[in-house]
Image (cartoon, rainbow, N blue to C red):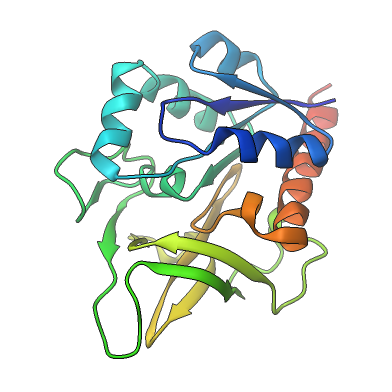
Length: 213
């Protein structure tokens, strides 16, 4: 079974994520150790909460370099919710610099009549990269569970893997660039479609591991 390092920096919904990965047939390993991240077949970076505490916790635990090294190595990497946002340069939510792995900003939804902020609840995805591994076996009208007031605004729009519409605002719901994938929604809370995404990630990890053997 594939061992997937689930990074612990005190800002993640670790139990639910691990349960989803176990259902998908992987062996999740909660860790904040660089050696265990390096040894794992893949890495998941979950996250719930605010931008500044997240990056502060990552840096205080000396996890910034292991995260960047895992991505640079070509290892499958999945960010979830805040674990997507902190990959970018900065956020309008805080003052701390992000990890800067992808150029771009994290921006707040603009208020408009008829919408709530945060964007909370079920919404459907619009695939902009329909062939990435995460979307296998999903319908083109897949619904996912969102809870966020901020969204990523990549400098390179080509990394956008899916969008979601809230009011009149169409924003990035997922990114994909080579081995790096990340989603704004919570697959671990998104019923069968979310479990399918986690299963797709685990299947992708297995296929990459077999290639390396």
